[in-house]
Length: 238
Image 1 (spheres, rainbow, N blue to C red):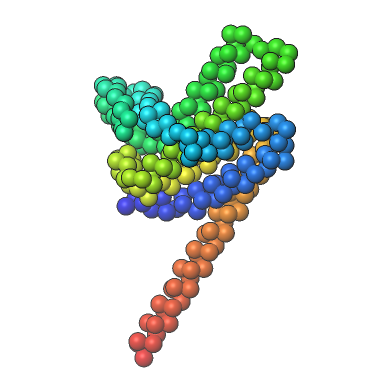
Image 2 (cartoon, rainbow, N blue to C red):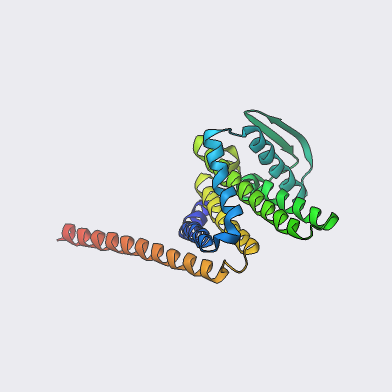
């Protein structure tokens, strides 16, 4: 019950952050000369998934890997790891909310793209025109990885009931956290990739404005319902 109430309290902020992150992504089109590789990758993977391939096994591997990494970071021991075409599992010594929701919140392949790019730059810094090519390839990879993460996260949540969500505290509570953290991660990722084109203060302002409107609307509904209840009570008391 406590987590359900927390989810209810956070729900307007989660929706506000999601809307703000999408609006923030729309601002990237105004600087398309620099942002086009990311936008192409972000939109390109869903199109490839729709018309070419599904990459289900790659998602299952990333899903279970996120569980394992989150478990390792939380001090759990990884006792088993298995990946199959239609599913997989990780056996851990213990679990928590972070471990249960990590695959839905942490875009593990995007983290891998960042690691590989930084490793490449450290081992063999690209020079001249290759520097721009390498950076564009990095942006393309980030767009693909984030598009992959968001699409498959939505797909698995829509297609079937996930035991991870029950383990984390319930479907409603978990979905609210997933939406909230993904929206914040997307906003921060765009800020890191395009610091000159993306404003964190604008993102926060949009989130707050939508959250405030949602609470105002909810308050109006509750107030109207309360007034009707009082009116009905007075009618029956006469």
